[in-house]
Length: 191
Image (cartoon, rainbow, N blue to C red; front, side, top):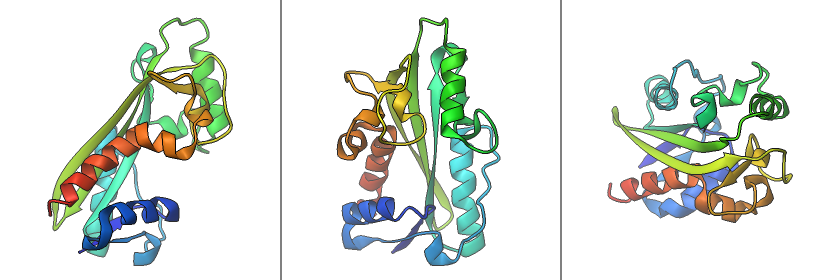
């Protein structure tokens, strides 16, 4: 069965293809000629993942999965959440986003936070969603240079390193996205 992963990140695609083996052939957005910006206009991670997957399914006719991820900070009532990528503005600047979070938490002791990923899978028009969560805290300053987004200011529970200080394999093993993908893969392997 062919299945579109709503991404053009070749590394992500190859990694998942290796996990799924020969039962599924994964295609990227580029592979199906989807060059437009896929809409993300929903107020929740679940809604955005669903909107992206249904966009591909309805417009291109392929079974598909898409994801959306957000950083949810307890003391900020779940912010930035669904607005994580554009928290400090529409230009999606990770440095500005981190600076805004650190500024808002300046005098706040409660630094509990979590990363949450939701994957929406559409097979023949039927949708199933998978969620991955990793709990942690927001550091007082950036630590590490690897990773992307909020990784330099997020330290997962049980670790002394930020996501940006971990090697990719270690981060993927415990990350929110890794946990959601694991659930997706288990489900697909039953198909």
